Amino acid sequence: MLNTRAKCPPCLARAEEDDFAAAVLDGLSRPQKSLPCRFFYDARGSELFEEITQLPEYYPTRTEAAILEAHAAEMADGLPPGSVLVEFGSGSSLKTEILLRQLTQLGAYVCIDVSESALEAARARLAARFPTLDVRPIVGDFSRTVALPADLAERPRTGFFPGSTIGNLTPAEAGCLLQTFRACLDAGGRLIVGVDLKKDARRLHMAYNDSAGVTAAFNLNLLTRINRELAGTFDLAAFRHEAVYNPREGRIEMHLRSTRRQVAGVLGRPFRFGAGERIHTENSYKYTIAEFHELARRAGWQPTRVWTDESNLFSVHELVAGSL
Ligand SMILES: C[S@@+](CC[C@H](N)C(=O)[O-])C[C@H]1O[C@@H](n2cnc3c(N)ncnc32)[C@H](O)[C@@H]1O
Image 1: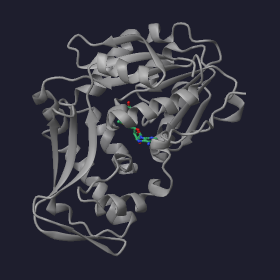
Image 2 (image 1 turned 60 degrees about the horizontal axis):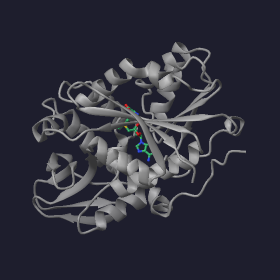
Image 3 (image 1 turned 180 degrees about the vertical axis):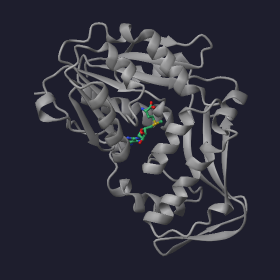
Image 4 (image 1 turned 180 degrees about the horizontal axis):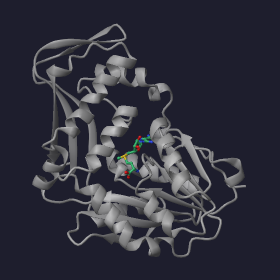
């Protein structure tokens, strides 16, 4: 029987830090205050992310969708009948529909996300659009080992990890995550992964500082969530969204900058902010194709094909699991 409970690599084997309260108290207690980006996705956060994907400045979603539209048939080619498509961080599953239209031989679609509301909306829409498709939503953290439904354990699997979600992790964490996926998908498994490419810093700046302020609302929603769920006392008007490209690290960094000296409470604990002090909320790493191939190989994956758009903004990679 395929083992879907293989041990997490130690760097991702988090215990109770996953708990929102513990993660927030820990992150705000550090010299460089930070909050883990997976907590962006409460119901409102997931809605705001969908709005971001429609913004004129935000090229990744429509570019990746166009790559999928152009090459989905090649991606579907060779998929054994009865296979399971496992999507990590599936969100709305909107882009997945492009693949699903080609994957007529699919046995089941397993979608994993921390956002229950996003999964439920996707499940209802897919049931209407693909009435014969066996859809299995799993609410969970994909960086922990996720157990697939027992009745699907013997089926061949293909992983799908679009949206450049891998860019939210440091390269070291991304390598560990690819090892976790490797254990979930097993030897011979395939992974289709979307990766944002390095490019002109101005283009990146515009994508994460949109003129309609939706990315700012998405970032600030994290404080709203803390206020609501953790008896927080953040004054949202006293924090400002900031997204900057760090060329040395090859990443966009999102921050919330305190506009004045202030104290904000979380679960009764006070946290002091200097004027201008920042909370680091998200990284979005950009890769060259060669850099990503190197990362994948180190994690036990063999890069087999890569598809890009004409302007080389975004890449979609096919990886095949090597034997461990
Ligand atoms: C950048 S969005 C991408 C959504 C979708 N795959 C797409 O390409 O449009 C990231 C998604 O991953 C989910 N997510 C983030 N961290 C996660 C984690 N550790 N475990 C499971 N889901 C996670 C979020 O809830 C969100 O739906």
